[in-house]
Amino acid sequence: MLVAIYDNDELLEHRECREVRLPTGVPGAIWRGLAYPLSNSGSIQIDGVAFSPTQCAEPLSNAISSTQNGHLSWAFIDGAEEAYVVLQGSVVAAESAAARLRDAGCEVRRHGRYLGEPVDGISADWFIRFVKPSSRDLPQLLQKALGGDRQSSENESDGTLGLRCQLLARELESVKANRALLHSNISRLTIKLAEVEGRSQTEIDQLLQALDEERHKRELAESSTSAAVVTTPEVAPPRAKQPSKLNDEVRSVMKALLPRIELMHDTMTFITTEMQTRTHLYRALSELNSTGDGMPASWKKLQGLQRWWERHVSTGQDDAGRIYARLDQATNRWLVLVSHKSDQNRDIAWLGRNS
Picture 1 (tube, rainbow, N blue to C red):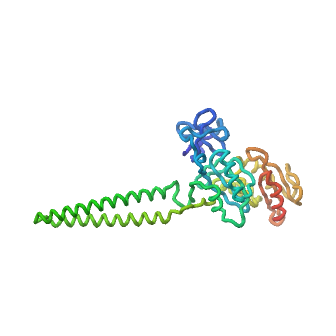
Picture 2: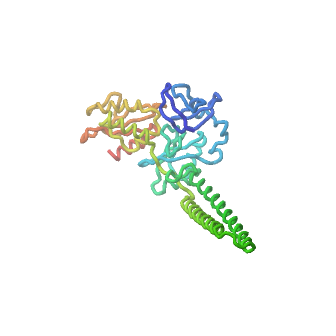
Picture 3: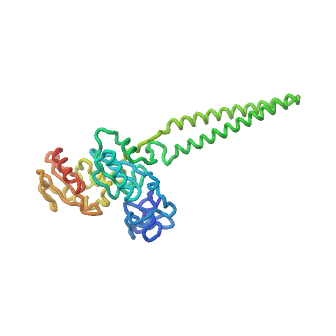
């Protein structure tokens, strides 16, 4: 549902949020990875009490969720060497989706709470990060592994195209019924004309004109229905789409406040997907931006690579974020990779290949 997001009575935005039932029994809505009490007017206050979505239940009006019926609402975010699947539902649904990806041959890196913007119209609860298969079509692979009723955002959304087909089919049936009625009327009129002389030719002409108009409507309805059915795909895999608002925020901060910082690899995707707050990140990057060619404060040498520094950074949930940086002497800019602690070995190997 569309929820008004307030911070200390200041309206931040209106956002499509998933409804839940809080542990206290009252209705709630999930925003940025946390569940807040939902007022009768359809708003939440993010400066008040909040709960983890894992503590919440489905709303009473929707006790049987789509995931319990075997369907997932999901989308994916493409990256350079890895990608994310983001999905709605419980932690059980996320575990199940991760297992399906593994069974499909994907190397799943990790999964956790999704903290980014809605993707392709889906306000996701969880992310699954995995290595992109090099020799297989990613959208088709995901569609086969995860299934679901979603269509690509390139098609008409929310089942509009299917509904349009149904309406056109009903209209076609109505036109056919009217056509049969007009034929019956013409037959009766012909009999009466044979019995009664001097009947107005104008009435006959009007009835024939009405029949022609109905025939024209029927032909239009049939052609529209055929076109709609032909353009409806049997299976339409979702399109990769990056969250836009957070991307714009990060790019604006980099351009205006951190001009000496150059983000590498999948850093942008990690920031907009797995970081609940970027305040600590911006503070750490500000240290780099104002440092010459020495080692910045709070940083240490990265083991295994020369001229690379590293430091911990909070993701807003824990201290598992990592920043790796090296000064490019040619441009006097800092090359920066931001990632998760669990990917450190892979990240160091990538930095070694691309330094």
